[in-house]
Structures are given as C-alpha cells and as structure tokens.
Length: 134
Image 1 (cartoon, rainbow, N blue to C red):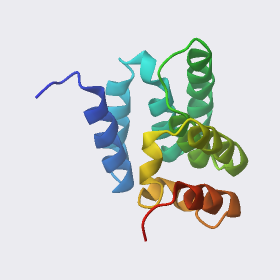
Image 2: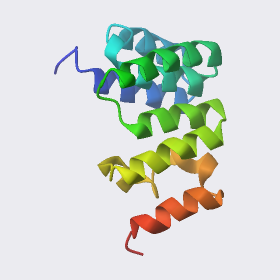
Image 3: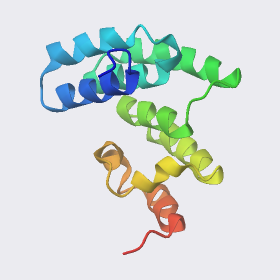
C-alpha cells in the first residue's frame, strides 16, 4: 500500500533470507538503504545474510545515531550482535532493554532470532524475570 513503508521492506528482506532467496533479500536490503535512519535494522539483515563487514559498518553508524538520541531499540542492537555471533554484546543490550521495560521483549520466547541465545543462562534469566505465563 505504501512503497516507502520501511518495516514492510525490512520484514520482506527477513523472509527472503530465511527462505534462502538471497538475491531477493539483497534487493530488499538495497531498498532499505534509502532509510539511513534505519541502519540498525539494515545492519541486522547484512549480518544475518553473512556480510559481516557491512553489518559492522552500519552497526557503528547506528550506535552513533543512538548516542544522538535516535530512536532505536536496544533489541535492534542485540539482534545485530546475535547475527554477528557476539552473544556477550547481544546479552548486554538485552539486559538494557529489560531495564527499560522494552515492549519488544514480549517476543523473547517465540522470536526465532533469539534461538542462538536460548541455552545461555543469562538469556534464561531475562526470560524468567519477564514472568511470562506458562
């Protein structure tokens, strides 16, 4: 409906790379490039697609934007670090999200992007503190 709705492009890129349609994922990544303020999400897609150097460059840009009070959630950074394989840094950002009562943490138990952290006791502690119903 709105070709400039960046979240739709972001989620479409995720769907493409999760289903192995990497060429299509890259095309969506390029579409996202028109939204420089979304460098955190773009960094995640690059990291998840295996382009870690681009992901790290965009992550640095996103962290600078965050210091300038830009609207990125701690979970956005955590997901990039998960995709980069840096569990310690990812958990640091998740802990911050927990301290700030981020509504996005309601997806911790179901979002497959957190799968690499599930066995980590620190992740389990955050989930436990969220007191999700069983």
